Amino acid sequence: MNTHAPEINESQGHVHSDPVGAKTGMWLFLFTELLLFGGLFIIYTVYRGEYAHGFTEAAGHLNVWLGVTNTVVLLTSSLTMVLGVSALQRNQLGLTQLYLISTILLAATFLLIKFFEWNAKFAHGIYPGSEHLHAMPHGEGIFYNLYFMMTGLHGIHVVIGIVVMVVIYNRVQNGTITRQKQGILEYTGLYWHLVDMIWIFLLPLFYLTN
Image (cartoon, rainbow, N blue to C red; front, side, top):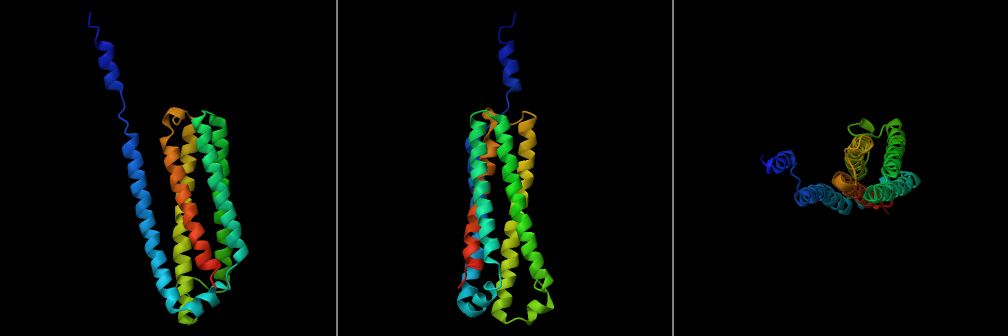
């Protein structure tokens, strides 16, 4: 009788896992995201120095309260994400799903507020490529182009985060993600904290410019 057969079967059924490599890859990805937005921040700084008056004038027409409200929304979503990861580590799957849903709803709230904010600008003819935008003083036009580009790019990252969180929610529900397989939620949490951090930089650049 072959006493080694069970060991061979276990070896064949083993799924290779490299949590260290996965985490390193995630940090590298986040670093490239920082480079992307860092480059945009540098561009903003250069133009701000050249068109300080125009930037201040244009920023005065943004709704500061909406910007601050969205900041509170995203910071709260970071908290619910942390609580979700913590719940999964304690194997409280139901609570993990609750916090994931909370984070998704907060992210959707952020996008809804941003939609109304953008819609108000569109209603006044202020959007990329519009004649009204081209007719503005050069500094104000550059400000709004950077505003739409950088907040729009950030919004895309929020949408991506929502999609990933929906997938994770479903995997927690069907048992694919558990306390023993929590890496993907931890990495998503890192991504989401980066998204929040970028917005914290965008807030003073656009809404609190003086």
